[in-house]
Image (cartoon, rainbow, N blue to C red):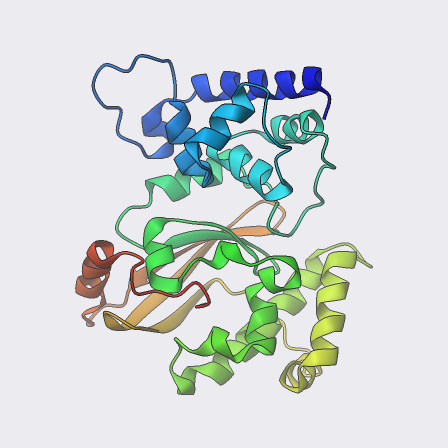
Length: 286
């Protein structure tokens, strides 16, 4: 990347960092801050980067950031769509299409996710690619943002990778499969005819999963809005939850949060999970 362009990238990152107050991204303000906005180390933590790497980016040095790193920086800095696109241009990267792990999460949805305390929550696409999770969602489900390519869609993994089902009770698997397929058909219908991303996902699942082929032929359509979910966590045991959704205007993204079902001990187990954290939860979990 030309040095002048890289210098512009560093300056843009610095300007976006300085405008954000710590409390806006869920951080404690702390005593007597020497710089306006966020510190470099705080942005690095929010974006999942090392402090040294992020510092080099702001200085206009170092290696070209990857698409995944740019997406993480856009979320950490609460960039608008136009600002996100400008960031990619400065980094000499193609602006990502909608969908996939580099999808842009609206700053207001990220802000709401930050403010959801004491309950697992995450933002995913309509094709079930998880874009961002709060810490309790990672502790409960594992790091669902770590997957790349087609496997980034949890729906794809559900029908092609048996490990994705390990933390669900056996009797819940068939209802979950039907729900996934009905929700996918609704998502395909909302998208424009011939949408390549959705068509490719459906075609691959039809080739690879007899279970998916059978359910897809049933033509069932139902958006997942409010349903029961039971999770077998390796440390705290069975979690009995309501799953609720808030959708973006175009329906392509949803904010999901999980609340304890009344009459169960799930609230106490979630409180314990905030202490246990991610220590006992493998990344492969769904």
